Image 1 (cartoon, helix red, strand yellow):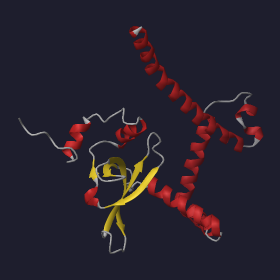
Image 2 (image 1 turned 90 degrees about the vertical axis):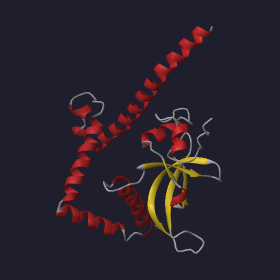
Image 3 (image 1 turned 60 degrees about the horizontal axis):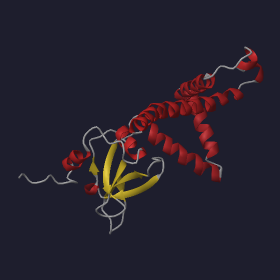
Image 4 (image 1 turned 135 degrees about the horizontal axis):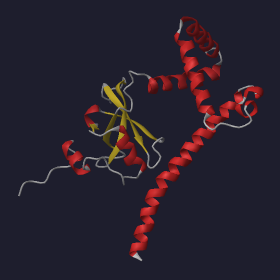
Length: 217
């Protein structure tokens, strides 16, 4: 019975990642293929060639993005974008939504952006409890006598969904930077701590002063 259980678990370990990867890729491709519907009906691949081509929507979406970027990068395109933004800026509710998402996109996609470049440890939600988070801003000034002049913002992700979490502002001295990649941190969060970084976690915490090394005997 133990051998059968071992084979069953091994089989699941082989097929679960394969099935999950296939499902996610298929979902993304199917969603992107819906962009084909934006084309005139007579030039849609299914009507033009008599059959649908999976993944054609991805090619179309990439082409639209590259073309939009090329147009927006030149002088005329920049003026059109500025005109469009000025128009949206005159609409009360729309301008707030547009500016918020534009700022988020600019922050995340900018080549000079340093957000989510470092995995850190912070004592959260209370002292003595360490949470894994991501450093998102290192220069936050708040004029308040009860606070430090400079604070840093840390996004503490929830498990197993790292896209939700808590934004906390803390003293830089209380933030411990970890020598692990962002990918390793995300894997640890999504696996509820089952998948640990390549470096032994105890050794990692000891290096950063969170755990103390035992005295030599």
